[in-house]
Image 1 (cartoon, rainbow, N blue to C red):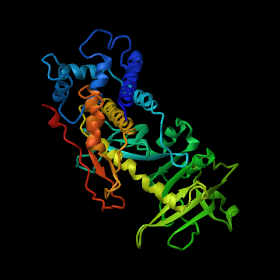
Image 2 (cartoon, one colour):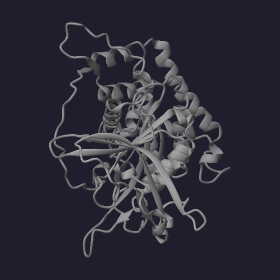
Image 3 (cartoon, rainbow, N blue to C red):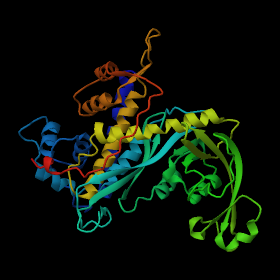
Image 4 (tube, rainbow, N blue to C red):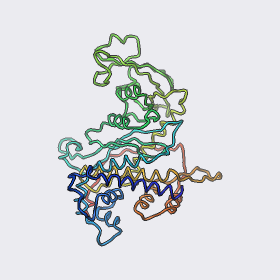
Length: 434
């Protein structure tokens, strides 16, 4: 990657910030009053400070941004200015900047978009009923938000995101909302885990001809495959028509593959039209001796044979890795405010900086030595830190690329580890006071 490509990404982000700054009346609490006077912390400077924040206390973040100048802004001044900002400024900045990425990689002509959600624990506030989760009688609960995202697996770009309160997760509804704003959605394969199993979601994808690959629960229990006759083999890949109808219309479905649903479960089930036929592809994959995955798709088996389906679903893990990098490498868990509006600002700021790094690293090519035992890849965690320093004008091309190239890791395919589950705990806010 040459310095012009690196500089272009930074210029695009600067242009997006200026575009938001020129329309700042839309993004302040009191238009015509907020950010109208000449101040030490103008609108565009506030945007840059929040984008640059890491996991340090607020006074440390401000001193670092102003390069330890004795005239740096105080924490009080920053908080007063921040309260004037709407988080929509960062959402629209994220959308505008992400749209500047014009060279996506594809898989057989399709863009691979993984959908998933992640819980984000925020400072405890019992009065916020939308985010407060009660932990039972006489026990302290916690507050959380839910980040729903679409992630480009091959280009390592978050393409869209919606934040919902902890009590209103709405992953399926959020995915449909993001799909409606997706450009060229018929050339994007939506890949998702079991949390997205839904009669309505499958119906919308099929009717809108949106390619999808979604993991579903087994044929036992309350799932899309319950009451459906499937082969007894360890693995299979079959096409099937599954009819669903209102529970009041059982007699008309005798002798065929059938399921009964409540009308509110599926919008197309009405008294006048109470049967719908799903024409889908069902794939069963054996993971180990007693573990299986069931996948539902509308992808044609001629273009996407079973081995490709396995590869596509395995690639979904990329969004899990991206969430981990957001939370730990970029410091998404270390907020600098207790207010939900300000926390949302920081969430979209982290998404912007993640994409900023991805766009820079997307053109860096590692020269692979044929005598090496492994193929090597960039250490994305180190690259995130380097790109943030570049954003703060502390590094310049070609040193940016050289530093990123210095930190590489071997690709070790086929590794697997048992998942370590532990109870989530809200992060203390006290360490950011001083």
